[in-house]
Length: 379
Image (cartoon, rainbow, N blue to C red):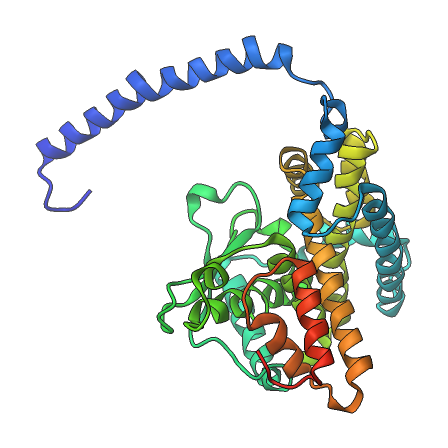
């Protein structure tokens, strides 16, 4: 409380606060608990997947269309996920051999999960690492982009109220060109935030990921509000994941362990295709999904459980990341092949970011029209 409050005022407010908690909030939680235990749980489906609900298959198909903005069916997405998992595992094996680790990949995951050298000791150390990474990214940006946001980018600790679950999130500022876009990062449980993933996290959440994609659109006053402020999971998160893949072109991942961290985070997005469709279309149990992620990533057990509960509660959303990224990559390769010497990756990035979030099918039609026109800087 402010220092100007008198002792009597402090006591009055504190007492009123406690009375409201004990007299209103606790009883409210008790009613909620009774409802969940007495009415909801006995009627709830014991299986976690959409398949177990009446009409669940149709609902899940709609959710996939909604989040990926494509018409890919669950079986196709599941197979695509297995293919991506196999591809990324092969890259992980290359790094494991490069660093001279004698054990298998599962042992390598455990090594990363448990060795203190891969974790910061203090939030200050972690923030300093983020700042150093950002400083290394900016020099390469002009080789890939014509524009950059006017607003700066910062990393700040996630507020304590939300520091028990999740890694963090990006929040853009108002489109004034001065208020920073901020990555709020979870500074608690530092022993589950591996240093090898920090370069990839910065690319995804900051530059040239969400900070570029969201802030460039908001700063573009020529766009209508729907495109300046609209959102589409496959586009936004697909761009963030695509931005991670730009690391080598930006001079990142020189350390093989940072390269491994990149593959580890890409693997998380690949296994999502497998476990989400596994749970909701192929009758996987929660534990089977947890085991699949633990077998294919270095994520801590607690974080994996949080992830799986997220997929159960929010079907299909997590599939959008990889589906979107693959489409961004496909369109870039198509543009380069068909435009030949006229292709400039900066023009391609201007093309895909210049009109805000779009459904992936609409983006593809836009890029195809741009290719047919001969490429260049057209919006």
